[in-house]
Length: 283
Image (cartoon, rainbow, N blue to C red):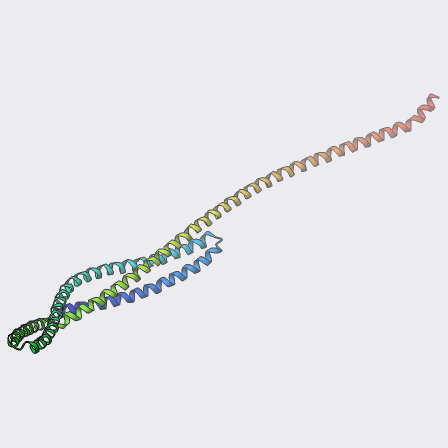
């Protein structure tokens, strides 16, 4: 059982190493995503067209979408490893309690040995003063020492019966627990980093929406101005035609008035030339 337990721990260690490598690859990928995000942010400062802004936004979404499955897969693997780790921990805790109990008994036996040594010292001092009771006290102390030796030998035999692999497995379990804790902390940091990236992408999407709204307003204003300009051009063309027509009419009217003046001048000249002859007849 201890050998199988040690083999399971070794398998879990290999799986944890694989997860560690995948985590490092994911960190490298997210570092590239952050670099792409910075480059895209610089590009978005000079956005002038909806097509370019939409292209970079799609790139952000694709990059974030490619990162999500890795995190979800890593989280699922961590959940499975945590369940296996809990089962393994419960089994090892029982072995650890047994080892702890035996260790406590050995320590208690050692303490009893130390107390026995002190008692022997006191006994020697006591024997120096009261030689009559020495053999009885010495016999009791000898019995106590033999009983403590038997108990210590029994505890040592029980301790030796514990497989060394179990002790090594307990130590390995502690190392695995530390690795799991570190991996969970790094996963939490990576999740926080992804959340920050999603927030930044959301901010960029909002900025893009504002730019698109501004562009739509500009296009609408341009169409309105073009419509007004077309209407004004049509009105100017109509007004020009009216002015041309009026000028033509005016020229015609002036020509007619000039002809009329010429006729009047001719008639007046003719009348003035006829005046002397008429005066001569009158005279």
